[in-house]
Image (cartoon, rainbow, N blue to C red; front, side, top):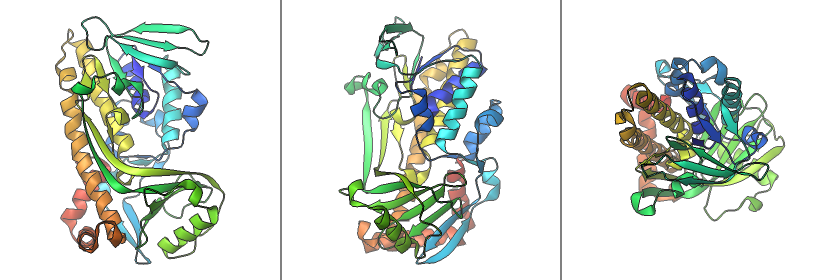
Length: 385
């Protein structure tokens, strides 16, 4: 049983089907909502190779190749940072909703059982010897019960899966960065796949979302609210931080305030319940690793279930699922923390003070002049470290 039809749940479902393992995916939202839900998305090299190895690359990955360059506006000057190109072979710039739509289409066309509008989901017997049971109410109002061998909790940070684990059995590690991003989806084409501005007033970013749209980000205080920002103020602030006029001021389709934080829940399993993706960990969007960590979890769990089924119920890989995933998660939490702090301190000296501002500038300069430093950054961005 898979709870949640996001990237983790849909990828896991497709991987299991490729191995002939039956599964049911429950999703509380409608198909229309899930397919239109806007999320950022860079499928890194490791994840793209995963889809290729499972025979799904051509069917589920959309978007163009990731350019091996990070574009910066530093003190009003454009400075591209070239990355090691061999690390980025196969990475794709793919909005998450495109990947989700494709995963849904493939899962259903291959005979998968995907049930939308599943309300009041509850998990029973997850730590007992008896098989787990998942209760839910379908779109007709009827209560349904499904018995299964394992439950994959892929329903995000606010889902029911993690809350089914007793609080005494779970440790939460977290870090609050002390600022938020105002995220803005606008009908404006991007001149580059990515452009990041480091400015004394705070970070700003523009990332392509298809040929005719961009996602913009503005660093702002935690006590900010969306209502404080008019469309004109947003465009004015973006021009100030980028240090140049915007190529166009198109319609703004949506805004949201996102406090930046890092979270890890440990262990990532309890009895026959296994947590994947945002149900187990969150990284700040600066790292572009949230979706890719979810994809990594899905592959690790799919391999563990496949091994269990093919080897007379040998649970070795299932028993090691949490520790295997957490090694990878903590490695990328370390990267996400360093990269987020560096980029924001390099522009905004008021964030953590002048000392951290100068250290961040030194770190940033090293990436432009040191092949070793650049190689390490390239490995992390590609998901290969």
